Amino acid sequence: MTTKVDAAKVLEYYGGEPAVEYYARAAASVGLWASEEKVFVRAFADRRAHLLELGCGAGRIGLGLWELGYERVLATDVSRKMVERARRLAKSMRCGVEFRVADALRLPFEENEFDGAIFGFNGLMQIPRRENRRRAMEEAHRVIRPGGRFVFTSHDREMEKWRKFWNREKKLWRKGKQIPELVEFGDRFEATELGELFIHVPLRAEVAKDLRGAGFLVELDCLRSQLANESQRVREFSDECRFWVCRKPGAEERS
Image (cartoon, rainbow, N blue to C red):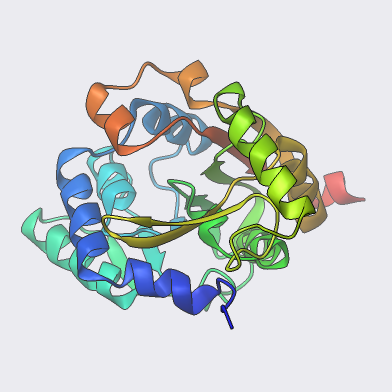
């Protein structure tokens, strides 16, 4: 019997040596995207802000934030192998970012502990099951202060480029012939040179609804290409995606 994709299967990919080394190379050579830098600087104008990064991988975003002058960054990942690799890279670069193993679904932090949070490179969508992705949103909401922002990216199932693919997938699901490991429509699970990769490709409305349910106010959602003309290196590293910037409302906004 085929086993559905779960957290252990995702961790198997991100704990594997090929993926760890791939992300370490990206941390050293790709760095922050132009779009990421633009969004982060606007969302977190105070460089003294205490920021939490979720799904940090080998440290690409955390190291990039440090280079921008953000010195209070705590970067976390559920993969111990990724965190160990990020620490080594940070030490070689004399970077003061702290890296720690933590599960985005059960964050070991107090309420309102951070000024903002980041879940980069579509990492939120690599959590299997919608209720778990919603739980990660709720955890981000819990640990950032009122007025703080949560920034992340996702792919977009409504993009014209992928419309034929998802139409074919819909027909397979209706017939019960989808890839057996998949849990929900929008899931993808496929072999790559780094291992078997899982990601959920959501609808824009699906993400917006879950953010509202988690207590966030959406301030921005737009495609990466609308924010910046990325370098060839970045485009080879990552396909088009959608940026989300949302805010935890203050007490006066919740009343």
